[in-house]
Length: 313
Image 1: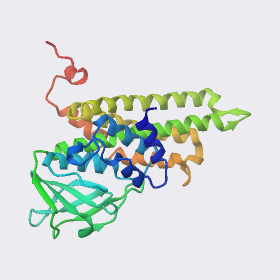
Image 2: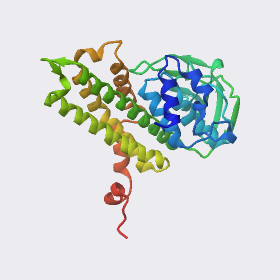
Image 3: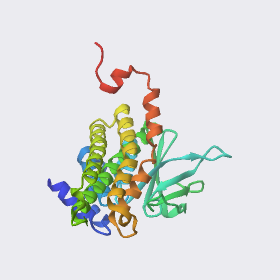
């Protein structure tokens, strides 16, 4: 384990990791230093995000660095300190103007909202806008934000599209899915080694060993696809394949982990429940398996080249 992983694990295991993440500069990792971030590449940012998801850390890390950071950099706006979130503006049904956005992650606990709207990026102080609280299945904030009467602190043109924003969000959630999946696997392996039945650990029974092997396979397949996409984040094929693979694997991973644990895994206090609730939530956010499989299916490309990257030349 390198220093970055070790530091992230130590911080994210705490009950409230955000202040330590800020102090260590990990909330701006992957954002260029000249823009106000901490530097580093997307692989570094993915490592920290994966670990935060592994510990089910209740922090807007993906929203701050991956989404808001991308929009701010694309518009040439500085990356401010503090917790950020980001969204694409939804038009008002009556006037056609930006009225706000629905299910914005962590809006109630972030300091600023970065909004993409019709070729512009705008930054809003969330203390000055109307927020209606909501949550996903895991209890993470997914709030409705009304911007009709709010004035942005800053605004600038951008070439970033809503589709590009959706891809970056999908990649971030895919990374988080692999972190939660790894947690479910580790907890299952440990429990199978500790829980005894008929005088021996249940992990020695062939049926349980088969379940753990299947679980490890699902985790590995998703992880390989997502790591490949992190290396090529602007490749729509890689990102679509990664989110489709990670979202598809989330269901079997959660099901097998709960089968291994039995009833104890669904209790309020158990760590497995925190991981699997996030698997079920994140697999649908920024598009689920079917949506991204549909994107791949609609691409105008030779199927062999699309799947393998090998051309016939």
